Length: 115
Image (cartoon, rainbow, N blue to C red):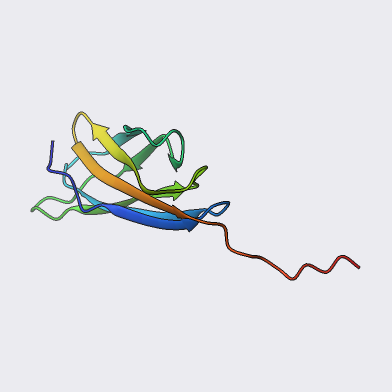
């Protein structure tokens, strides 16, 4: 396993959602399917797709960039809502990314025209 990558940090008002893209480099010279999981205690506030397929890296140490979208949709206020995004593949290895969410009070919206 590689050391954890830099954290993805989210800041969202209650009732809102934010999406960010995690970029990683796939080094294996074969196609890999990375299984994606969330390991932490954020109780469903973070979401990501179940897997991502990445084509083979070209010979010579040139990796292939791949992406995974992570969505944060908090259900409670909090300053340090944490989880860990884990991408794992037998041939491609494992990537661990800390996720840190901050949920602030809801923002006023409107005016709403009811006519």
